Amino acid sequence: HLLDHFFYVAEERMVQDHNVHSRMIRNKYLKDLYVQWRGLLAGYDEGLVRGDTVLATAVWRNVLKADENVDFVGLGQIVSYMRGVLQGLDGMSDEAIASGEVVFGDPATERSRVLMRSSMMASLNQSIEGEFEHLSPAPS
Image (cartoon, rainbow, N blue to C red; front, side, top):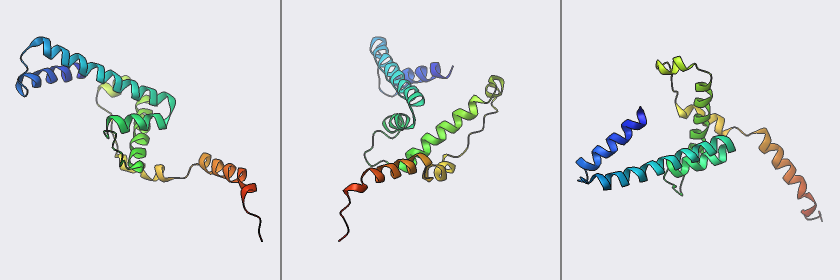
């Protein structure tokens, strides 16, 4: 299992790279790492359920290290790509996935989709403009 191997390698690197030979200390670090991993997954799960804004926040926090100078178009491409990949995986059989028939595309292809103006945003802008028409100064 992939997750098991991740933790085996993490423990091995604690010994080799950081000279952490105490099993008790390694177990503490591994438990902390597991809690962080669970939090990461919870953030992505919440984003998948609650929408792209929440998913983008999880990606920004976990992948982009909460960089304040984030490229919002790039972040949108990542979220759009994730949604597309999940939709593609959902349409595949377990056997196809297990046999490695999964093909991942290039996230850069999502750029045009991210930059496309949505009909929801257009209607929202129109309704906002309509709400504030009465505040415009009268022509002289």
